[in-house]
Image (cartoon, rainbow, N blue to C red; front, side, top):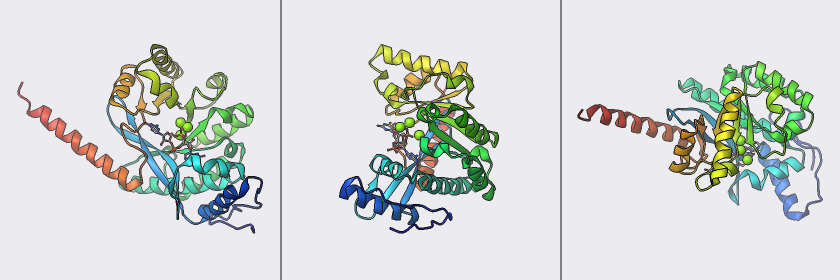
Length: 292
Ligand code: C2E
Ligand code: MG
Ligand code: MG
Ligand code: MG
């Protein structure tokens, strides 16, 4: 394989790691193509304001539209990209698509903030803040329409470098969110000194919440902790109405999960948002028409 230059002008690969057997190698070869060939698509999942039902935020989740194997989920290919050292290329592809979509929504008078996932490895790159800043300003987009989701793993490595990178991103107006909160084997001390705006409580805490008092206590305490630090809390994996109501009772700010919407292409999200507005208007009408 020869090094190839992607549309962004960056080298998307230099070498092939052939230590993982034939299938993995084939997948990797296909992935290199996918990264330059628009086979990677971004789906969007809403973060719903629990108290009002409003949607101002969506998360961008990458999928691989494989020519033979169909739509593949991140678990099936992101680790291969990571191991091959191609994370930088994936991040560029997802950021580009997400920011283009943000421009569209913004132009349609629907300013949705899009959250893009960053892997720990893409965050050791001290040029990232400038590169992202340039991508935003090239599109004339308010930086507040981009959020970045990082994991606690990232914070484990080099705390000073992490702080520097996050500070430079946040100074531009980009929101920083800690993903999979509570699962990272990380000490909580980063909550004291790192510039972050939001915690996302991992779904492994949310799933057992209904039947398990200790699990429920963990959830409500994590929400209280976030609030006492001035952070907003998003619950992941809200897959039932009961979970939604329970989180609302705990004062959680946002919910994300299959109960609300699966991650879907932008056009489907548009339809989902339109349906909700109709349902909203109808229930308002019904309430207004109700006899006193
Ligand atoms: P994540 O960032 O924690 O994303 C949440 C995952 O939970 C998504 O899986 C989403 O589809 C799933 N999910 C949401 N609601 C529910 C629910 O109610 N029930 C259940 N069972 N699952 C729910 P997905 O899309 O397969 O992504 C998995 C992980 O892959 C993400 O976890 C993220 O760590 C990674 N990933 C996805 N897109 C990207 C990307 O563009 N770049 C990087 N670096 N990583 C990404
Ligand atoms: Mg995420
Ligand atoms: Mg998560
Ligand atoms: Mg996750």
